[in-house]
Image (cartoon, rainbow, N blue to C red; front, side, top):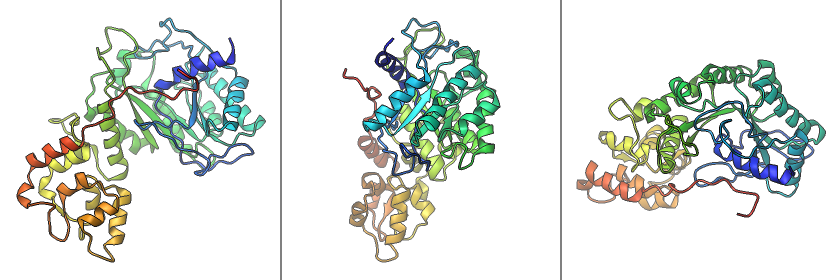
Length: 402
């Protein structure tokens, strides 16, 4: 099989893996640079990094996961790269400025150790023979030997071990040959050994959303627990795509992309805004409102804490206001040392005023009469302004004309 045909097959097979992101590393080499200036971040509308060559080593697999296109029982075209072929593609695409790095994953062939050794051989060639210093993110194969995780971690910038589904029960249902503990074992090892030489850009994982019946509360609770326990850089959420037919799989016409989007927004609140899962969801409301972003929904449920005076509230309180992010909050804190901030000033600062205006006052004044400060009015307007436009078909950029 020609290398171009392999690339077509294995780049297409990799598009269902969401857990790649290029940031947080300062590796340098003769060819390529993984520092902040060396990585060209390019993200699709649903948040996925598209600056990396994202391919599988092979789409052959010994496993038969119900949700996976590459499961062994599927009758699809199979291919496998040699390590030298991946090096050839990566170096040539880099020289043509198509990519700034590599995300390498794989189906499992023979066993986890055999697959990991092939991945290690490939990246060793890139680093040592071709002197490639660009960003490399690789998938660790759960169930492999610990010493192989160590070898791979010294070669790559970021490592990911995917838990695939939010709960152990979900794994047992759809991928009974996999063991939740094997994935967490890799995460624990990376956490304990992370350094400027070993997985310098940290580790990440991916969860498929909607293939099993877990609530958003279950999913976000799992993410929060992993952030706390394993110091993950990122949890990626991948809306379940109905590529297979099976009695154990849900019957969906299209991926739950809006739900995925809300989980990403909530995840951001956990990582940067000081929120906890219990602030956003509970047993009575275990799923996010698909019509309103999680921060605005939280604010509506805690309207007694608003409106906040923009010129005097704390930095932490600024972060609670819908439409105000970390950068905006810092800008407000700095600006109000010199002048009293008005609604016009906020707009000039780049604040998302269409959301923020319902929850703030400027110099004691609400944006309209305070009689409009009520949940029904605010919620109705937020729904109109926050209709998610991200519910479109998700596509990975192709190197080929379609």
